[in-house]
Image (cartoon, rainbow, N blue to C red; front, side):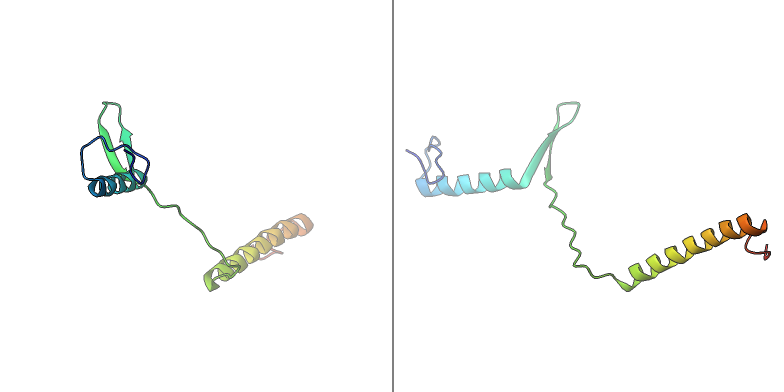
Length: 95
């Protein structure tokens, strides 16, 4: 006799109890992972949830500030290279 999940009732349980048993076992199998280490011991760990990164195109104020700071730092480095190439002094004679 097959139950609602398609498994045979070989345990001699009442069909409603066997259905409940299969629901618990299927839930357990879908939420747990078993790993085996080098000594043959098995450990059960909960499965990690899938991590989602949602960016709706909005930048936080700190992200805008960091981007602007990085751009100005690059401008300073380029200015230093140009001043050294044109005059031989770093930052137009300041240093």
